[in-house]
Image (tube, rainbow, N blue to C red):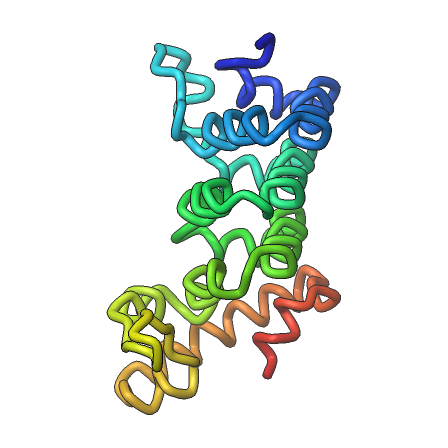
Length: 193
């Protein structure tokens, strides 16, 4: 009750972010869902606070103390399908920036390692370039008539004109990651393959 409507503000403070982490870790499913909704913008309080207007989940991932809240959201929200959808939706179109950010990379690593592969597949595609994620949203149909996402190899074979921009984007991303010593992360290794 005390945090309702203030989770974003509290999560960004180094000494108070542990309160939000505690709710995520020790709270019940309903409490977790409320915090996730608020931090993902689902229950964002509409007021004139200009300080917090432009802060979204991707920005929290980059803040030194707030990213611990996001890590707890991922760890303890991975059992709830609605939490997974909210978190994935909030991080769409932000993966390239997070993957090469020294603090955000920890969030990306836990996200890819914890959430079901089917849920994070669209986010992984963003690492190959904006055009890849855009065109991959037009999904082909799998064996059981469910949407599937093409692999990088399939995409390049189907769109030979996109090969050079995709490889250029991937090379730039890898170089930035090397410059920042992010080679210890599993998602970074998967980009090298």
